[in-house]
Structure formats: C-alpha cells, structure tokens
Image 1 (cartoon, helix red, strand yellow):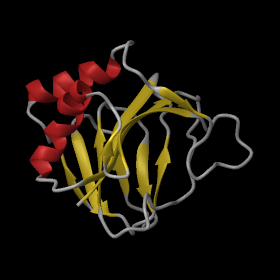
Image 2: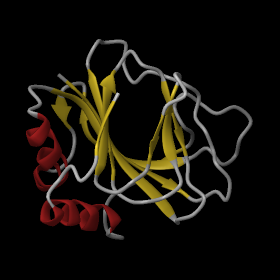
Image 3: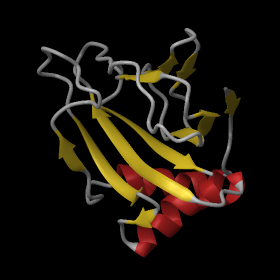
Length: 163
C-alpha cells in the first residue's frame, strides 16, 4: 500500500472536486454496499461509473476532466473499471465487508476528494483516511472495506482498477 498526498496540482484538483460536488453531477443510487452489509438499512450509496469491463461508460467530458488527470499521472495503460462513489452521512460509521474489487491481478487506486472521518480499511489493519487530494495505491488481491463518515454531509472517492 502506498499513499501519496497532494496528488494532483491545486488547479486540477479543484476542477475535479468542483465537478464532483456540483448538484448537477449524475450520481446513481445503489441499494447497498458491495458486498452487502447484512441487516442494515443505512448501507446505500451513490455511484457514477466511468469505465466498466475496459469500456468507457460515461460522457467524454466527465472522463477527460475527472478520470484522466489521475490516470495520466499514474501512467495507466488500461482502465479496467473506474467509478466515483458518494457516501451520505448516516450519523454512524457504516462498513462494507472486506472484499476485493476484482479477481484479476491488477492495480487499485482510491482517490479522496474531500476531508472527512471516513476511511478505507485493509485486512492488515492499515487505514487510508479520507484526506482531500490524496490517493492510495495497492494490489487488487488485498482485501479492503469502505467505512462511511460521520462529520461531513458526503464522502466522495474515485475507485480505479487498472494495469
């Protein structure tokens, strides 16, 4: 696991953040975390998929302005999946189960858009705290889970599976 703070330049980061926090950005309701948190009515979130199964699924302008600043800096050869997750404040930390994003042996990047007390936790016990403009890089075989925030209205991150 590798964490890089201040990953994007300030101007590029602010552009990404402004796009993702705009009330017109198209987030879509997901009825539960994947894998499902059992017996919990608070495990929903919102998502916008940019890439799925190596294919772009979102508008060019969004991919170019949100995803490519990150993937270009990482020197990504192939984007397998990329999505923007938005978690709402449930007034308690809601946790997904530990999981892997894919069975393929690829790289994962999780980019934090804002500061809050949510985090990504790894099965090793390590935590990647939500700090704006920071990114964590790890291998897809490492199990991890999402944990929601309680101190802000929303938590946004960009999850990228890539080679």
